[in-house]
Length: 287
Image (cartoon, rainbow, N blue to C red):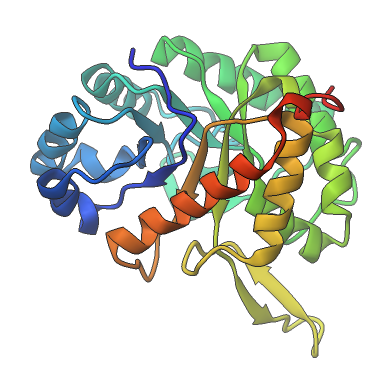
């Protein structure tokens, strides 16, 4: 397996795929949604070609570890076969659910943070890791609602999930910013509480403010990945680096895509921020 670069990577979406193959610009690594390639043989061939030149990470959107009705074993096998072909450096997915029986929903829906949910998610993460034959990273979600009957906070839920499954975590810094605004908590405290020992990757992406119809005059922030990264996300990223040290970081941009050079400039800026952090003290306060 190719080792991951500590230079920031970019999410590679299908509109940039041919340009990436032809121009081969400098990039630390690339991350793709494997579901976009499973039914597109030509795109899969181009990605296989790129995998000889760049480390590739897979970020799944259809495994749905939070579904009470179980994992789709056929889809998991497709992801395993694709991973065996690409030989990714990392494979990740979301702390969410998006399927019920045979129905798939184009959303990442929230979970209550309870012992029952933890048992279900833990069993599914173990099943996914066994099915893939490799570690699976779980990403913290962007939150818009919470469950009154949750019995633990998100960081504690993730920490217990790591203990029970041996999985790793994907810390999406921009999701923390979005959730903190929407749910009214301190993003720095969330980072302080995050299970830093399990972090294998970080994400940064843009969000879109929208009027909160439930509370006129206020905003809800939506994790659209359709804009440049907000200054508040960059600031929290710098704080996160100070807390945890350098981690492989990815720039996500899924909608209203910019040019490939503009996307790569966002990655270069992430590297500038990382270089400005005194990394010899980066782990001083981590736990």
